[in-house]
Length: 257
Image 1 (cartoon, one colour):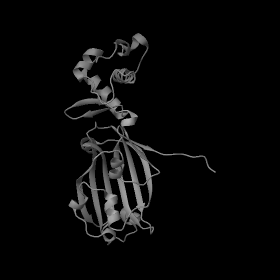
Image 2 (cartoon, helix red, strand yellow; image 1 turned 90 degrees about the vertical axis):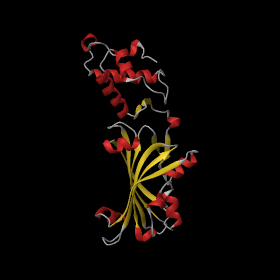
Image 3 (spheres, helix red, strand yellow; image 1 turned 180 degrees about the horizontal axis):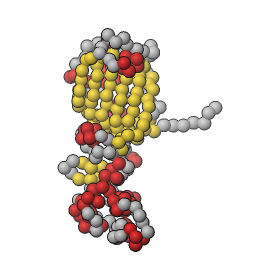
Image 4 (tube, one colour; image 1 turned 60 degrees about the horizontal axis):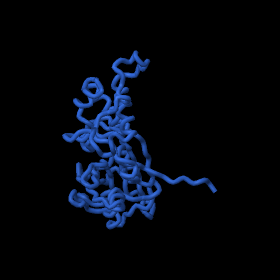
């Protein structure tokens, strides 16, 4: 579908007094076309060459405009497939911050099949931060686990967890492949019952962009979490990066009293 003429950027800034860079004008035109429904959620945008011809700009300008839209989470680029409009709010994964659940449980509640491909697994001595957070001595070892989390085969997050080796016992890479980490902790008598989570917005670096199949600079939600068991012992120190175009964190607020 072509972008309507009214949405196309002017051929020259001075003609309309618009001194924004050309790629910003193109990004705005595409954004407005998406808002009008000219491109439905999860549908592909025309190829760069086609958009450049429609809008009378260079392919470089179109590429810069699409990168800008990707950074805002409005579109996502899938390597080898093209650029797609982000899903609607109803299609995004919503995780209530008031509920302590893992990724696998979140997906199961939505009828999705969760995956957890192991990117790195090691048993090592903890860093100073890991030791302090988990209440360990420098001589006690930890498991460091990094996984690519998927739902329905689509990459949604990269999760990193540090666990006390002494607290949960022997663990191998095969034990954490495509499983719920919280279910594993429960089976080992270390079920998390309380957690503190910090949340911030970041942009994807080259490695995360490749793993999550998003452009470099795309909007991500970064979290850091410490979880404790019923006895008050810290059982997990975790960091994660979630795709900003697919994942929302929500919370319920109530008036005091």
